[in-house]
Length: 104
Image (tube, rainbow, N blue to C red):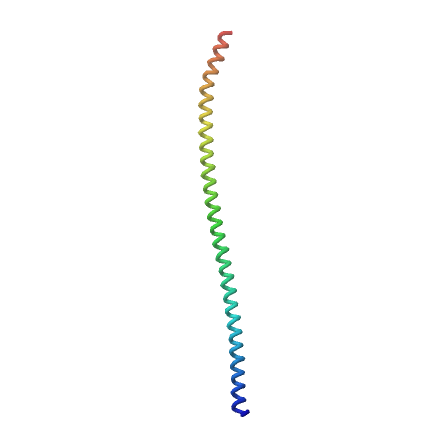
């Protein structure tokens, strides 16, 4: 084999090694980019889930507050109705007591 042919084979082998090294570096870079992108997707999903959970909690608290206010208003109305009914009976009871005391 001539010196020139040996030199071409050597150059070809060197070029192949360089391409292999470049390909390995490119593969590492792609893998690192994919991992970084995956971590970012997880972080974004977690942040979105936390936001949604906070919004759901705030809505539940608002609904609970409205329900509590409505219950309080209903209870106050019922109490007022009971008081009025008791006042009506009080007048009647007072009249009966006075009538019994007067008849004694």
